[in-house]
Length: 124
Image 1 (spheres, rainbow, N blue to C red):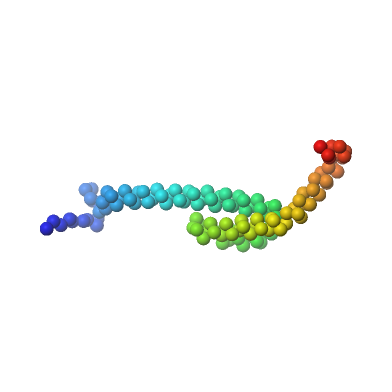
Image 2 (cartoon, rainbow, N blue to C red):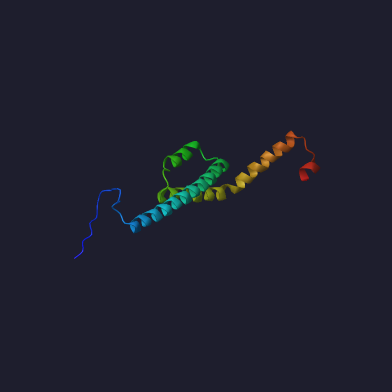
């Protein structure tokens, strides 16, 4: 019977791993790097959206810090945290939309007053 001798130590003629196994590892590494890039991009998009909503909704810094202290790494748990925060902020925005619109209208009125705009200018 034939025996194959497998070396556990690398030498100039033997790496201790088959070319097929090495190819699978290389492919898996490429897949994982792709997933890492996708997750990093997704978290970046969520972070931008969350920051904009925090500003718009005037979320207190303490709440923001409490959230960011729990966000670490690129794991699915981190992505789920971000998704839950986005859902919470969109719900809060829906509840506050009337108030937000009133505040913006008030700011516009103040700006019109500062510029001494006429009624016809305000209507345009």
